[in-house]
Length: 151
Image 1 (cartoon, helix red, strand yellow):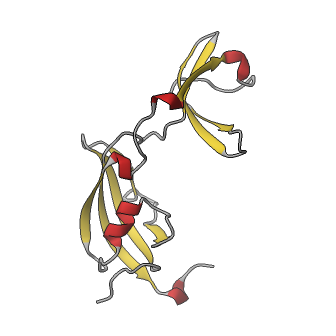
Image 2 (image 1 turned 45 degrees about the horizontal axis):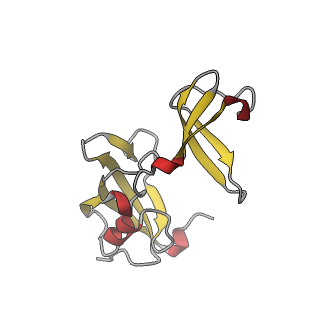
């Protein structure tokens, strides 16, 4: 029986949970395909990738990923209060909304609205899962043969 190796293209079903059991993402919903990616190309969390290497098709595993090995610690300096006048007109500043800004280096920075009033807007640039330990229930569905890769 073949096993997933570095460089293999794999397809997995997964469910990601917070430590309190809250599901934050899953491939097990109607109409959603298993997640496909090539091992060794940093397309998923490194800890998760390392645990998939060596798995056989049909094998299931539960993988715990510490916050520092996932999306890092929640950083207070990533939360900033800015004057509302710096936000373009027409931007929906409803608490919880996701926005994007362009950083000084031209990179897109995802932001989440934490608070807004007539004078200021509080934005959070932390990843929504920063500071959380995560658990993934995974099942290796397929190791894709190179000739069967989509173009």
